[in-house]
Amino acid sequence: MPSRRDDVARGAASGAVAAAAALAAPEVLAAVVPGAPSLVASVGAAVISLQPPGAKDFVVALFGEADKLALEVSIVIVALALGAILGVVSRRRFPLAASGFGLAGVVGFAAALSDPTATPAIAILAAAVAVGAGVLVLAWLGSAEGAPTRMPDWNRRGFLIRAGAVGVASAFAGVVGRSVLAARAEDVMPVGAYPPPTNEAVLPPGATLPVDGITQLVVPNDRFYRIDTALLVPVVDAATWRLRIHGMVERETELTFDELLQLPMIEQYVTIACVSNQVGGRLVGNAKWTGVPLREVLALAGVKPGATQLVGRSVDGWTAGMPAAWVMDEAREPLVAVRMNDEPLPAQHGYPARLIVPGLYGYVSATKWLAELELTTLEAFDAYWVPLGWAKEAPILTQSRIDVPRHNMAVSGSPVVFAGVAWAPDRGVSRVEVAIDGEWREAVMSVPISDATWVQWTYDWVDAPPGRHEIKVRATDGTGVIQTPERTRPDPDGARGHHTIEVDVTAA
Image 1 (cartoon, one colour):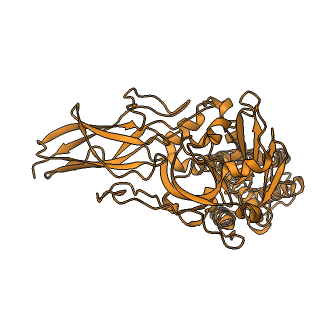
Image 2 (image 1 turned 60 degrees about the horizontal axis):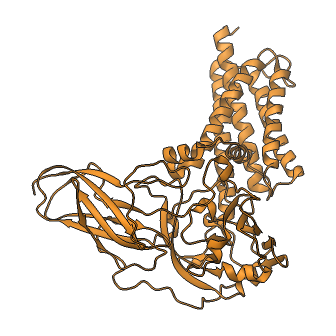
C-alpha cells in the first residue's frame, strides 16, 4: 500500500495531467471544427473584460506585447493547480472531483458564450469535450474509489510513465491545435484584387537618416507593435464580411468588402501609438496605410446633426469611441484601411478592414477587424476602455525617444552619435533637442513625411569627455509646444516626460 504522502502526490499528479488533457482537447477541437472556441482563450477574454482599472497599464508595462501570452500561461498554471487539488480529492471522493471538472466546464462554456461570434451549441460541445477528457484521464490514472473504471494500482514507475505520456501528449496536442487555430486567420486570402489608390504616397528626399540602430522610418508589418484584447486573432472571411453604419444617420447603410473597395481609395503614411506606451517605449510605429477615406464612408449614411461621437466596433465586440468633430475635420484624413505597407492588411492588424485616425491613441480610434460604425453622442456611450479609467478623448502626446545608444552602454569615438525618433501626430514635429548633462543642444531632423508621421533625429557629440553622462531628448510640436518634462503614468491619457539614458564615454 502506498503511503499517505505517495497517495497525495499521485492524486495531485493525476489531477494536473487530467487538467492538461481538459485544456488540450478543446484546442484540438477548435483546430478541426471551424467556429469551435479555445476555452483557454475564452476564459482569458473574460478575465480581460472583468479587469479592474489600472490592470492594463500594469500588465503591458510588465510584459509589453507578450501580455496575452502571459495571461494564457497564467490561466494554464491556475488550471493545472486546481486540477491537482481535484486529483487529491479524487483519491477518496471521485464523484466530487468529477463534479469539480464539470463546474470548470460550465465556467468555460459561459466564457465562450461571451464571444459574439460563438454559438451555444458549439460552446457546449467544447465544454463537454474538455470535461470528458479531464474526467476520463483522471479516472484512468487515479485508480480511485468511485471511479467509473478502476484501473490497476500501478507501481510508481508505471504510473509516472503513463502520467508523463498523457501529459506530453496533451501539451503537444494543445500546442498543435493552437498553432493550427492561429494560422487559420493568417490563411484568409483577400477577395479579388485591390484597386490602385488615386494618389501615391512617396517618401521625400531626406526622410531617412543613415544611422545604424535607429528605428526604421517605415516599420515592416511583421515588426509593427500589436496591442489589443484579442487572445486569438479573429478569423474574418472577406466574402461574407459586412460594414454596418448606423445610429444617428439619415439612412442605415451596409457595405460588402467589394462595395468598400469600389469607393475612391487613397494612401498615406501615418504614425499610430498605444496609450500604454511608456516614455521611451516601443508601442508606436509608422506605416503606409491604404484605404477609403472614412468621411466618404460616413457620407453614404449621412451623419445627422448632433452626432458628437463615432464608435468603431470590432467583430469580437470591442469598441473605440472618438469625437465626431475630430473625424470630420478636413485637416486630417481618417481611413477605413485595407492595406498596410502595400500588402493586404495582415490578420493580426485587423484584416479585412480597420480604422486609422491620425492623431488619436489607438484605444479611442484604431478599431481592428472593423464590423460597425455607429454615430452617437459622447454622453450616450462609453467605449471599452473608458469605464476602466482611461480618458474619453485622447490625442497622441508629443514624445521622443533615444534609440542609439542604449541605456548604460559604453561608447567611444569622436563624435559620439545619438539618434532616435520623435512624433506628435497630427501636429508634426518642428524641433528635437538633446540635453547632455543638462545642457540642451539642437539635433538634426529628417525631412518630415507629413504632420501625421514621426521623424528621425540625430546629434553628433564631438570631443565627448570620458566619464558617465546623462542624456535626455525632447521634441517641439508643429504648434510650438515643447514636450513636457514632468513624468506621468500612461493612464489616463498617455505618458509624459523626457526619455533619459546614461552612457559611459571611454577613451578612444
